[in-house]
Length: 298
Image (cartoon, rainbow, N blue to C red; front, side):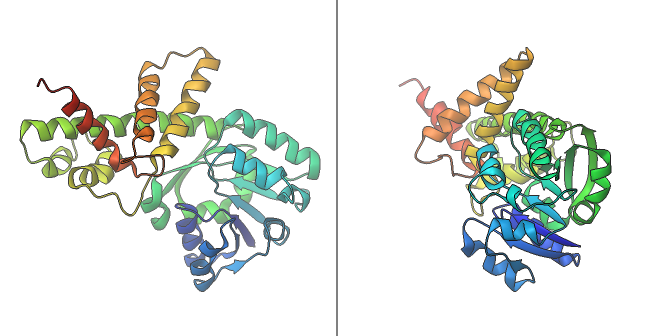
């Protein structure tokens, strides 16, 4: 079985590397072709276009930036929908809008008979490299079976959450917690610094207790020591996700005051030149330090 993989960015690249390490045959395509060279050296085959990548594959995986990118690759000019076959499976590993997912899944099947499985992931780059991602799946149960060659290599757990869009809705719940947690971690560490304790020791000191979390253990030491390379998660990505939570909650009639406050904080962080949309989430502590300083009494 040949897997087509479109989107070899921050998390797509380690996914492809993992598939290759597990003996899968993978054809790759990316809008920035220079990102393909290391994967080709590792054994992947480069496709000349997104359509070629989909045409030659049994399963097509997407790992793209946002809803607009997914829609453009699938249905835009020279989109892969024009090359896909009846009963072929598209596995969307991106984190995108659930309502758009429902619409695109129906359109893909109507236009070419191919099936759509929304399968956003959690765990970040370290889990992608280790094949320990968590997958939230939305779509037909039979398609989960078809997707086994991908998930068995990439994931420690796959949960079928329901029909199309249910996986993306679950990922929004996941990101609601993560995005708010990162801001709380930044606030806590900035507070710890102000008290004079050794902030570098705080994440390890809290490990295993009720305050512990994977974001604390991954981003906490980076925030405490000022490390923001390599980038593990962009501020703009978390802003995109929390904005989607606020939108979806409004449509569902759910009150999300913490999420609304988090969205305002991410907007403020993105507006700062020393943080910015492309900055790693470890830079969020800079916002808290600045705000603490600005509130000092002269």
